[in-house]
Length: 456
Picture 1 (cartoon, rainbow, N blue to C red):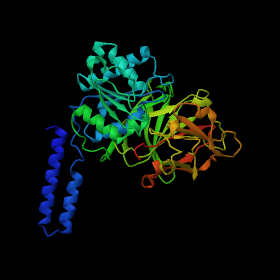
Picture 2: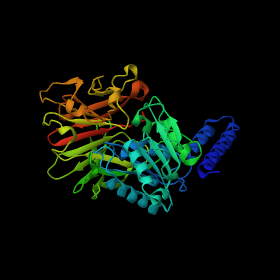
Picture 3: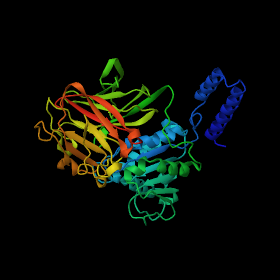
Picture 4: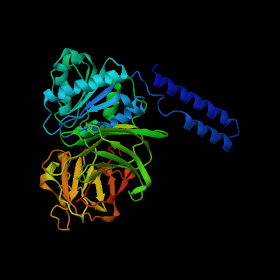
């Protein structure tokens, strides 16, 4: 019996025994309290991290990055995978699919690093869309490369003629042609889900876990960890995904009521490595944090996150140099704040009651024209497009709407000594509404990105 399953069964038996013992004590409040306390002490859905699990490496698609696998990584760790066995490759996502002569050496290095760190003999690969096509070509390119991979998961990948070099393969398909399949692979289909919905959904996670382990997951939830957690990742120049060098990262704990830094809130200070990597940072899984990328002579880029809940090694702080921003750059002014709001799940503005509602100081910015489902937008760029103090959120900003997976709306957000309230109701689910408050930084000196969860 796998170690995690044995531990979960043992915990269940132990908890049942204690509950029974307490019931013989005339149901006293003290007995119930002891039972509840022991229930909290018993580990969650699994026991200690299972080091027998093979390392898991994720490869993103066009205009993507490693953080698109964050929620699935946390579901895997909620089911016993060690966090340090899950990693991601960040390749140049500005070109469609990335050049193999550059990406394949990155995959070689990432796989070798995982094997060396874990002493495993093989890894499991997960590729999304263009990244899936790259992983298929990577395995087909060399028997030695294929020999280092135990399983391949392709999410909305290519129509391969079969599993590359016989590596066991799971092909996951969504809203596209219902006849798509890879002969010889395990093919599963979720006809109501697009490419990123497929990557982040609980249904896809369940199929991944079954395929890789041969067992059912204990949970498809992201289970909050007890105590402190570890947060780490990379600061990247997007969309080339090269490391931000000659910079520092400041991490602050925030007052959730205002989004402002707490007194003595500085919790981490890192000099970024050449590849932009930083951490780990010891965090409270229930707290809200700001990550500030500081570079001499450039605007400070502030990143805000909802509470992490579990250790996370796939945080990606996506920034750019002035004049090199995607979409040509947002208009800046000391009297206005510019925002980018992103998540790893498509924004829907045209699905009626099933639409997302994303409000900034009470204004919904996801109109049907700005965020149609067909746009597959993951990031919304919000700024005063004409620098006229007026807003028009009913039509998209063409320079941003014309870029894959991105949209934009003309919204004047006054800067100053105040907080901006950003609220999201995902896919019409009022029970999952969440609010994040951030300072109204002036856009001529500061940039602001909010990264929201994709799992409600």
